[in-house]
Length: 283
Image (cartoon, rainbow, N blue to C red; front, side, top):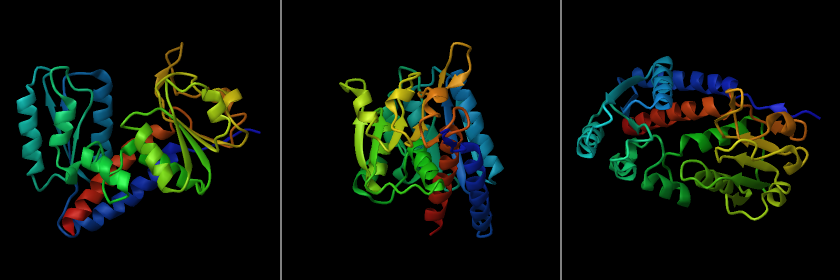
């Protein structure tokens, strides 16, 4: 049996069409959703991500502002820019691209963003809202994973989900989102004694550690759903995920490819969060 692909590109296009329609409706009321993206320094990967985010805004009819600063920008100056954007009524989402230069405290900068404009979902208030099941902004990557499960009509009630990775950006919020849908959740990480013993019990596996081939075919229960959040390069320099795709697709029931899986969904959910921020401010 070969797994069915969960096509992140196709699902992204569908969701962005819906976003565009809601943006048009807001514009009819005189409100254009606005996203401000701040890039400090010249990290090549960050430049690509930022470019894609700005383009996605334009494609869905939103207003975007890209602010680029030299790597030697002071923390004080960056915090002042964030505060100015907090007070700008034309901006509904603020995103400070990570990583930041070493002399800037990323946590302090993220906490300076108004929770009402924290469309990345990284603020402590956003994390707390997710924890207790209150309205807030969900981090975009795990939010995208949930949409992918929804798109295949997967009912998580009573299912065993294993999340490999415990980052604040993906692993922990992913576990909470799965828990909200009544899954039984196990979080694995670098100190987990027997990863294979855990994953072989899983109906759903989310691999999010940034390490090639962390999940291989012998670790997957036949028919399981496998979501690959990883972004790595193989020996030929081609993009690959955390999952041994060629092996696992012969065992799993559903699988996301890399590229073209979770990646496009991350930026799409950023658009959804920005739109929802604008809709909330519009009442």
